[in-house]
Image (tube, rainbow, N blue to C red; front, top):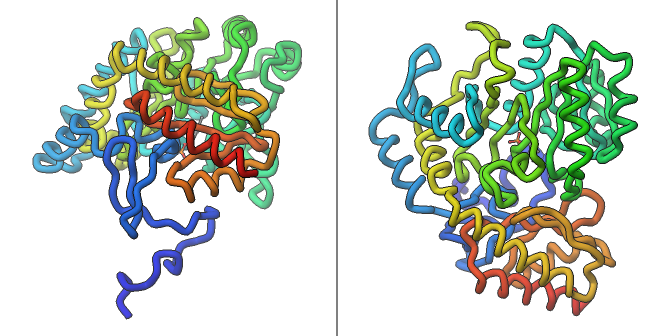
Length: 386
Ligand SMILES: *Cc1c(COP(=O)(O)O)cnc(C)c1O
């Protein structure tokens, strides 16, 4: 039997994910099709990745054109898409230099290394319930002990403070003077869609500045328009020293970035860090098209559709709370979330879970009011049966 004829669920894949038994073969806009021809409304969007929707014409054309021209050179040279993307991102965040890599975890690794090198210090402060990735450094800075099990010893020097607890953050900084980095997600995504409070973020920025530590906003999930502004940090009045990006940046092509804003420049010299594939021309060409597409119209669509979705969820029997920003929304339920995710999929809607029993919605940013209604109808029907 040829490999193609084996059922996909028998593929020799390491069981790192509890995959649903569905195989996707095609996408278009907010919809995705499985290998039986069935279509689903996609409110997962590859976990906040396919922000412009599947096969959006702009990144598609940009990537196709670049595929036809040059796939790869090396970071020993310049390529046009990488230079253009660095310029676009710098403009959007008010001045920054970029390091490009291939994933969120790599962007976080870059931030950890940058902070240690730039400050000459070693300690890192992160938040309980945070998520920063699965490589050893990023995992060590992820505040979810269950994810550490079996992988120790972790990278030393990391302390955790509960989100939105300023005193605990101050306590975690002590003894002062040796903290290189405070790392935070403006809205904890994987941890359960928990927005940080304005005062907490302001205090974190002040504490970092006073102590000479760098502050990194991990905007891998919240960035590139997901929360209704280009960066979520904008809504908190936060001007981070470092910014990590990935998920939505390439609309599905793998790309991550560390942005070092102007006040924190100077930490890396040639040879300090690198990535063979980082800044790949095809991924950068697509990412340029994505960044250019996140304009004021798109951002106001994110805010409007997000508000409709949040209001619809909040009024639903079975929903005990709704939180998040823009189109990064979490609903707490009066029942376990796993079966709700499965029933929604059975009825043609892809949704996610996050943290402890939170239903998470991360639909494409291009979503329309009709799709919001359709999704709310399916969730309402699922909750009514349980
Ligand atoms: C997804 C995520 C990461 C890790 O990204 P990968 O591309 O899976 O390595 C890091 N930080 C945050 C906030 C994320 O949501």
